[in-house]
Image (cartoon, rainbow, N blue to C red; front, top):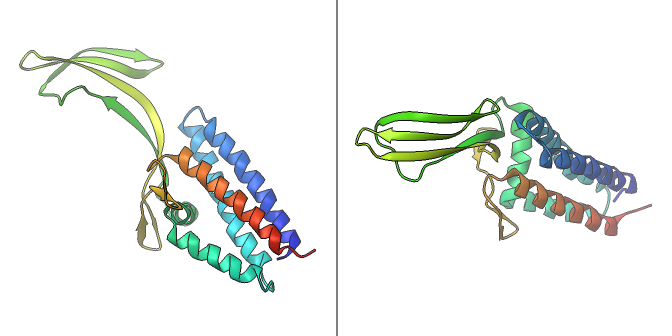
Length: 196
């Protein structure tokens, strides 16, 4: 494999890691979303760079071909590839900011009698049902989640598995971390096919 291509893939991995650090430290959705998009673009480029670097390599070419097949078969690798495509070529989001409401029981009809707000956002409420039953609710701020994406007319759900191991479905942090580890190993393995 071409040494310059492997070096370029490693630089792209460094860029992907920097984007992922921005994802991890995002304080809100407006910081998270562009960092996640950058991460998808930077990290997915590594496959294409290594593919180009393998041209003419008698061992590197078949190896990257097997890795491309693995990318199509593995839930995480496949999702990340198609999420990048959906982001670049589609209009729907590849992640969403999903707030949550904790309810101890299913509410009946009634009304909210008190609402606690901090920094302009609701954090808790007291609800009284028509029967007189009281219910306390808590609201959690938005949490980024991966969503199903459509690429070339086919739907791809957030991954639940990576190389046979469970990852939390929809969790961008688990997906991003596992993807970075895989890409680092991929580049390290490509070194064994390097030509000076």
